Structure formats: structure tokens, C-alpha cells
Image 1 (cartoon, rainbow, N blue to C red):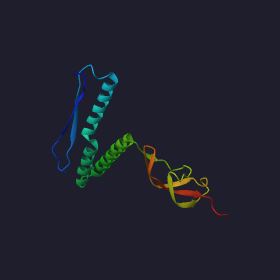
Image 2: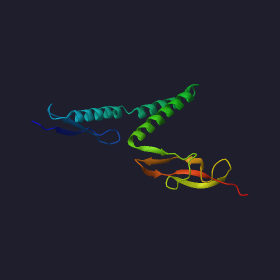
Image 3: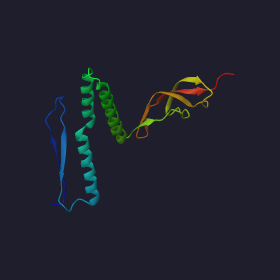
Image 4: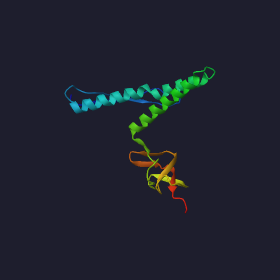
Length: 157
């Protein structure tokens, strides 16, 4: 038998009523190439990584620290927990293709930036972003949200 069998099973509903599916594959030893095997190993490692959901664990730790605000170290623990969550979530989103739109100090680009004001200054070239008020994001080279910025304007003489 030189074929791969794929079986999908549905797990019981979780607390939110959502069901999950699990896909398993089996194959004869000689039917999968080395490249396919490496790809399957990478996908399995990625699935294991997502199965652990460290972002949720970090949120739990931050919430626990916030509940213990009477202890002197609670604020530091909460800040560390929130920072861990932020870094993990940002890394997961970046891996999926999300990237920040860099604006601070850049030349204004109407394709990437939304200027809401101008500031008179001699410290930056006219049309340069002097302040970023809100981050912009791209997803796989497609603009999701422009960065909200203030751009430089030469003072009136």
C-alpha cells in the first residue's frame, strides 16, 4: 500500500462551545520523501509550540500578580508578566506576517502614514515625521492601518 491516510477527528466542545479538530496522518515507510518528512517534522514542532499557548500562561501570571497588589513586589511582577505577554504575542504575530510601520524620523509617505498635524520646527526637514502618535501595521506587505503621525513644517519667517 503506497498511500498516505489522513484522518480528521473532532474533539468535544470546550467551555466556549467550540470544537477542535485533529488531523493525523499515516504512511508506509517508503512513500514519504526526506523533504516531506522534514516538512512534517517542522509542522509537528510548530503544532507543539502552539499547543502550549505560553501567551495565555503569561496572562494568567500577570492577572495573579495584579490580584496581589497589597504585596510590595506585585507591581514589578505584574509589569514583568504583561511585558512577557506582549513580547510573546508580538513574536507570534510577526511570525504570521504582521510588521510595524516605521514612522519616527522617516520622510512622510502617504501610502504608510496618516498625518494629522504639522509642527513648526527647525530640527527636522520639512515633511519628516517628528512624532508618531499611533503605530501602523502591515500584514504580508499589505497595509492594515497607517501610522498616525505629526510632520515637520518650517517656521514662518
